[in-house]
Image (cartoon, rainbow, N blue to C red; front, side, top):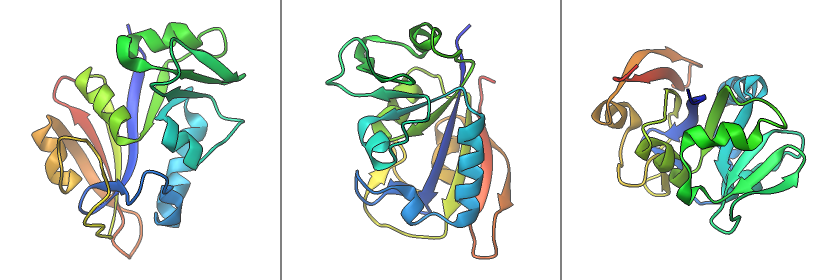
Length: 183
């Protein structure tokens, strides 16, 4: 049985995870979202992300699997950070690659778009923790590459169901949990 993977993501209301590849969400996300995000990261076994996401928020102390086409079959660049090219892998393969360092039972998917797409293509997003900020970017990095728009409309079209939405602040930031129809 493969590990459980949760996509933890903050977007603009028009579905962008950032305006540029190097922009970190902490520059535009609400303090309430950031507290929630950091608590989820602290509780996870491992976080899976792309190279640019890693570089935008480098944390040597965190366990990370970093996807990069230039990484090859696997390169431990720090004691808790494995870089690899996911092209020939499946999500179930990740557990064995990191188990000598720390077990992978619950992993977070932290971005960017291509990492989200990889997990979606493998039908390996077990839950989505979505925060939508009351901002409109009009352009930028979409939540998923081939699918654009308000994530609260997009996720149902991709087979996810919301368990409800919770306001995080009076400014309009909203948090919701989504599960796939297969769950």
